[in-house]
Length: 178
Image 1 (tube, one colour):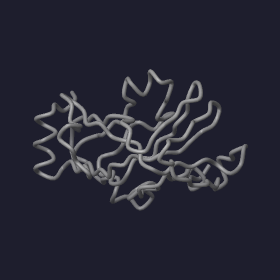
Image 2 (cartoon, one colour):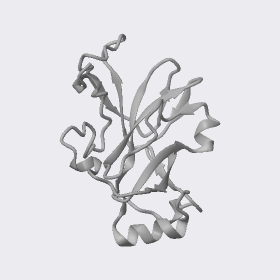
Image 3 (cartoon, helix red, strand yellow):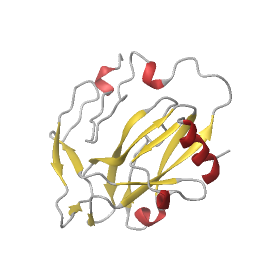
């Protein structure tokens, strides 16, 4: 079951969902539109190593936009800071974004109860496409949780992505033991 617009508004009023900045026009019938933040990043190395801390280079999207290139992984970020304390948030691309050939996440579309931060996007494209800071990029949908949460994400000692800033965050796979 997905929360409706009225339920999302109720949850915002009680503080179990937080979206900043919040614009009423961005609330759909069962989702909330999020926008591309002004920061992008790319990995420094061409070959990434899952056991190594792979460094990224940050840059800002200029006023005239930035042309994404195929076969390059860009890390982006949402303009919106969100908190979700009683629901499972899912981030999906908007259909208009997909119709431009842009994917906004490779595998990380689900958040956890207790996620607090800006969403890092794993952006790729099918052909060159110009993007702009502030453009609608995705939509958040919220699912209720069945059962009580023992430990929320923002309370876990090993939560690698808690409190994400308004800049893209690189993979923290290297912090896992394997």
